[in-house]
Length: 66
Image (cartoon, rainbow, N blue to C red):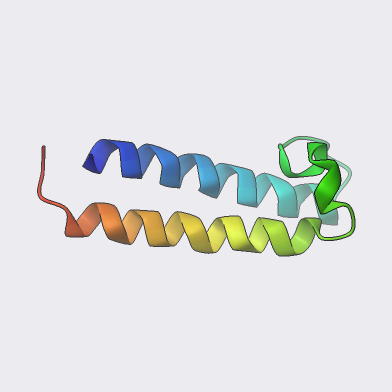
């Protein structure tokens, strides 16, 4: 379970960073921009993904190994 939480945290971290990079540069990568519901809220969604990533990492750390 710990490894699953870490994997999901890593994925959320990468997508959150990718969304912010997309908004502030001309690099076009990441999944946040592909979701039509989030039009105009990409920065907020990216920050929410970063917060979720750190919450998942904290939850993984509180779990026992294995």
